[in-house]
Structure formats: structure tokens, C-alpha cells
Amino acid sequence: MKEQQGNGPGKKMTINDVAEALGVSVSTVSRAISGKGRIGEATRRRVLDFIEEHDYHPNGIAKSLAQSRTNNIAIIIPDVKGVVAVPFFYLCMCGVNEVAQARGYDMFVVSTNGKDTSHLERLINENKVDGMILGSTYKDDVFAAFLKEKGLPFVTIGSLNDDQVVQIDHDNEGACRDLTAILLSRQWKRIAYMGASKDLLVDEARYSGYLRAHRDIGVEVDKSLVFREEVTEASMRSHVDELLEKGVDCIICQDDAVCTLVLDELRNQGARVPEDMRVASCHNSKVLDNYPVSVTSLRFDNTEIGRTACTVLLDLLDGKPVSRKTLLDYEVVLKESTK
Image 1 (cartoon, one colour):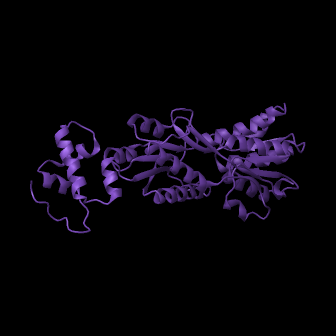
Image 2: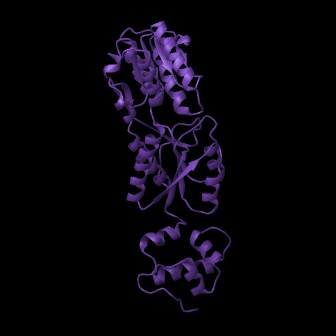
Image 3: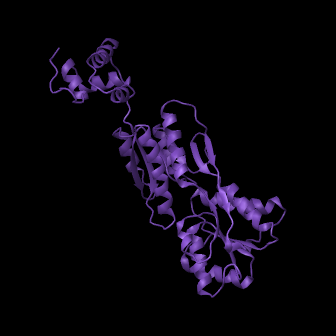
């Protein structure tokens, strides 16, 4: 056996050091440590005994090697610049990073553009992460499908129509149902809904909650008061003007971005909130704090959903049983805009 070099006190042992000391290839050591690939039992035992005998690694690193762990995870987020989306993902990442650091993991942030999975593929092929968190979910989610095909452990922040995927979400449908139900209970029968019919499943969940609240009390939704297909600012402003002319009781907005635009257009038209039009948002953030009138909204803890997603992913990596779907709670915050 060759005498190992360059491993003085405090210096971490590398896989190259092990290979050189035993006179075997790096790939042989890697297969022995990971338990994967073809290797004789005598050689595997020799490598593992050597590592244990010389105790070159702190316990955490030795465990990582034995389990073929990188102690890295990644959170995948879309390339966003919106005033609502940016704070949401920032708070999620804070929650993920908090739990990851507490449990000895580091976090990569990967920004995706469109449906390009190349960034994810590189991380997997180069064995840089143990698992991933998808920061948003879509109707036909190419990222979830890709990770399932690759067999990498992952969880989603957001729901998917796939019982095989571990999902962590806020109860967006239940929250919007409760908000709409409260407004309907005030005998406001003409409640409009404004949003954008995109691929994001959270948008579908919120609209479903609006519809459910009407079904629960046997009231038919007036589809002429629902605007979800137009996504340009000009078209949405035009719809606000139309709703003003119709004298509806309230406008429920899909999120803070839509709500901000609605409030701005109402101000441009000289309409007062809530005297001339009541307004509510299906999501609350600091964005709405800038409006003179406090806005009724749904409050979700976006840092907590990041913490929960990371906890579930790390438990999954540790082989612990996890729930296939976790729904986090919400709060309906009634304020001046719906008085």
C-alpha cells in the first residue's frame, strides 16, 4: 500500500487521496462508497475499512460520502420581474435556506426561462444536488415531468394533478371560496372576478374558489362579470371601466398585480373605494400597503411554505415517511376596501 500524502492534521481527505493510498482508480473508490456500480465485495470492503480506520473525515463528511450525498439542494424558480412574484419567491427562498442551513445543507437557486430544462439536467448529470424544490407549478409541468423521468427526489411549492408528486401548497381554493362567501353573505350578488387565465395552477385554484362560493349558496355566476382571458394592461383597464358602468358590488382580483391595476384605473376614473366600488385581492403583499385605502385580501405565510417545502424534501431524502400533499392555512383580512 502506498503511503498517503498531503493529509496532515485538519486537512480534509479527498476521493483522490483514498484512491492513491489504495492503488485503485477514483471510480472504484466512488463505487465502493456509493454502493452503486459493479465492484468486488473484497475491494468495496477494503475501501470502506480504510476510510473508517484512518478517520480522515469529520462525521458529517463521512456520512455524506457513505450515502453518496452532496448536501446540496436546489430551488427552481421562473424568471420573474413582477412586483408580486419577486417578493413571493424571495420569501420562499428565505424559508428554504433557513431550514437547509439548520440541517447542514446548502441551497442553489436556479432560474428557468420558458420550458427549458437544461439547467436542471446539468445539475443532475454532474451530481451537484440531492433533491430539488419546484417553486411554482403549471398545468402541463415540464419540470415535474422531467424530474420524475430522471428519478431525482423533489417536491413542489404549489399543487399538481399528479398524486405521485409530493406537493406543498396554500389552500388557495378554500381561501378564495371563503373570501367570496363572506362578500356574498352581505347580499352583494354582483361580484366580478378579474385575473388572467395563464398556465399557473394557483390561478385556476383561486378562480375555482370563487365559483364554489357561488355554488354553495345556489347562486349562478354571471359570466359577463368574469374577465380572465385578457392579459394586457389596456384590456384590463377597459374591463374595470365596464364594471364601473354596470355598477357591480365588488371586484375580486386574482392577485396583487391585478388589484394594483384595478385600483389605479378606479382612481383614474375618479371612482372612490369603497363608496363607488369595493375591491378585494386573493393575495396580500406589501404592494397594497401603498394604496391610501386598506385593501381586503387573503394573507399567506410565504416564508413558512418555503420552510415546509424544505423540511419535507429533506425528510424525503432521509427516507422518512412524508405526506403526498400538505395544505397550509390562510387568513381572510377584511379591511376598508369592502366596507
